[in-house]
Length: 103
Image (cartoon, rainbow, N blue to C red):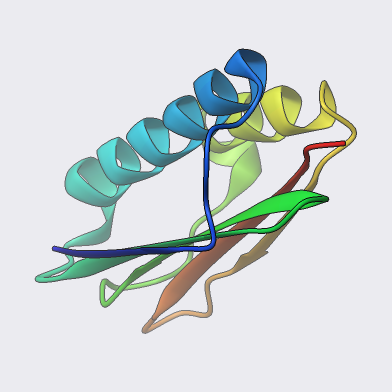
């Protein structure tokens, strides 16, 4: 697993908590379901938004309707008027990107 962070200072506590939830739940899904041998997390922030990208090299085919994990992430992101994008073609890779407003 690799992680990188750039442009991120202290954020509102609620945004930090939501970001933690997104990354923790996504990595849990990777470990449980993807068959991945590696994953990466990239966090980028500026004065208006925090962007989180989690990528894995697993089998792909992630489906929000198949369980509560991805749906829970989407609900948490929506509570902040954030945006979630999921790309997970069969054969992988899976890329989940979340943007959380900070202003």
